[in-house]
Image 1 (tube, rainbow, N blue to C red):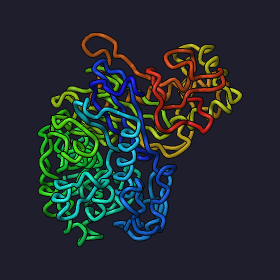
Image 2 (cartoon, rainbow, N blue to C red):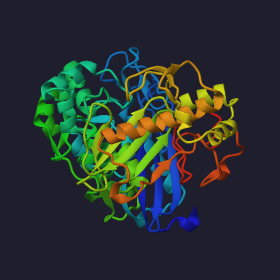
Image 3 (cartoon, rainbow, N blue to C red):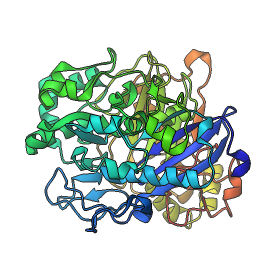
Image 4 (spheres, rainbow, N blue to C red):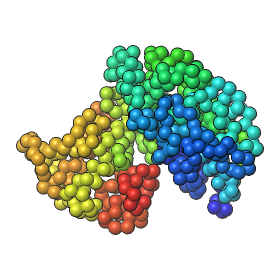
Length: 513
């Protein structure tokens, strides 16, 4: 680490579901430093009962259990979240994120990292999560003492201490009300880029307002996880960026302003609690003096607006107009750069984080790696090598045989079951093993193309084929990052992209990445 400590660099932060992570990137885009804190492993005290916080010099805070916005809050995080008794409500303690940041920064300091060489900080947060700042919190943010960790100073700054995250699906009633106010699901999609979704922040705010009006009234600012993280570095409230803001069911994606109809359907005085949105690449201010004095950051270090994890993926993969990225994970996710979107009832259209005049289409398919693994086990002797050989032994088009595999209720479209059709268009109960493998892969990718075109994607944009960034889970052929694969029977985790990067959610505990 020592020989890299004085490189001029930018810091990229990730406030994800399971961890807080930082990478340092130099002028040539080389990552030369990484550090992280995993919530369940490194902060097991959330939210067990503990003694009051000890001396500041201990470096680790022992916090009392957070009071949730919802009844029946569980007492311990799993995967970084609290899953409540109803099975629908999912939250995370906001102080856990703050304390994780403290720990990462202290690890960097102990390693000799030269903070004075950091030119700018930015990052990403799990999309659709929200943070509710208590009245008076802004004064605390602007007057932080460099002698104390953030977690100790911000304990009383949140009106909702256990906050809803993207896994929450408890707001169906609020979704229906929002769609009705906007003139229907399709009208809401045309306005905000998506029909009403339970995890989207506007519906989460509506639920909190209805169930906990006192806490809502005592909230002076509502942040997304991304703008919350930026606020910690800025020492004041950072605005929501266009791209992450378009995942709230509140932002008019073409005009880049909050929809008055949607705001009114969710909660009163909501616009003043959100503040005006800004472009995703906007520099929102210089870093707080807290970091200058405590860690040695240069006072000119800039804080660039943080965005959501999905928009950050488009920016991080350096996609361009006409490109497609496919992440093959537990759920498959399709990213498409669009100039002229067609918002629909399925999928999402977000503001583009790189070019504010363009858009990002996102489609999520629940039957991803687990479905592929089932077909591998059934038709390829539990071997990715056999799976790959089955693909190579069959022709493109599969002789007209086509299959749709929905082992669990699919998101896009809402369907379940396995449906196989032969070349004559007749439904059949089974395929030969090699045909089954190709039917699965071709059916999944045909669905991705079909729904992408439904959102406005056109193949061969600008007269040339699109580039496709695709994970290698189906075909573990040696390529970038291949040294991580030990044998033909070990597929990389489903989030591994051709760059060799490994996402946070492996397809199985035995993932060789």
